[in-house]
Amino acid sequence: KDTETRVRKALAEVMKSYDSAPHDVVKSLAGDVDDVAIPVIASSVVLTDDDLIEVVESRRVACQMAVASRARVSGPVSDRIAVIADGRAVEMLAANQGADVGEDAFHAMIERFSASPDMTEAMVKRSALPISVAERLVRVVSESLRAELVARHELSDDVASTLIEKSRERATLDLSETASGPAAVGVLVSRLADQGRLTDTILMRALYTGDFNFFETGLARRAGIGVAAVHRLLRDGGEAGIRGLCDKASLPDTCYPFVLASIDLAEELEFTAAPNDRERYRSRLAERLLSQFGDTFDIDNVEYVLDRTARATAA
Image: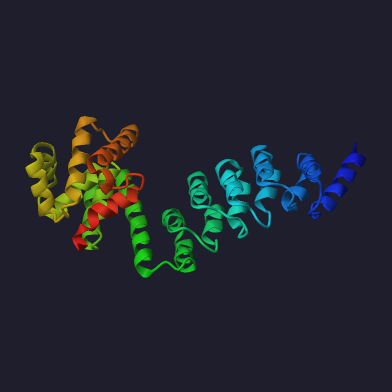
């Protein structure tokens, strides 16, 4: 049997560079044991996209890596690797400049492997990235990779500043969620206000994530009134009270419907801030905003919602 394997391996080494090799022979070799299959999977131009996708779906990691390492990997094959392949194969695909990796594939990589520094570094070092992918990456990469991401992909100063600020806002709200009590959130809000970082977007982002403690404390600081008074106005002040509070806190008009929908939904769901409540609240809020605003907002892109509501100040 060893002799037969060596013969098939030798045949594969010949066939991998033979452009006119019979398709059925090459495909048979690609389905053989790894030592035989890998040379043809990695190099043969006779294999079709369907053949390569079949290899990826075989779940054989070494063969998936061979597909990801090919000099050219088509978009459909890259899509399949990104969605189902082992992390080692996906990382190899991300590092392969000859791979045609589409926007959806990049997003699948981030969703599956955002915690892997090697994976995110391979993506940052790509020669080109869609802006939506760069925006998501800037949230999860280290400071040094963030600087490289901005420089390598020639993001404008405005775009780079926006991406970095969004990342900082998310990190700030993560910190708020783990803060031990209202006093700690109050200290955090005061520091942000002193630094000029208690922005419209961070308040809207807090609402979207269900961090009402941060939102109320931030609104109180901007309005110059007590947190208890803000809490009462949001719950019992009606639409006129909420509108007046938003005006006093200098929130743009476009934020008001977002605030109103968020408060109404929290009361409707009897929101408790438990993890399951947060997920339920976010999902229902997206539905509520979609029905309320229609084509005005793209609910599939939460960042757009947040930016669109909060940027009216510049209008």
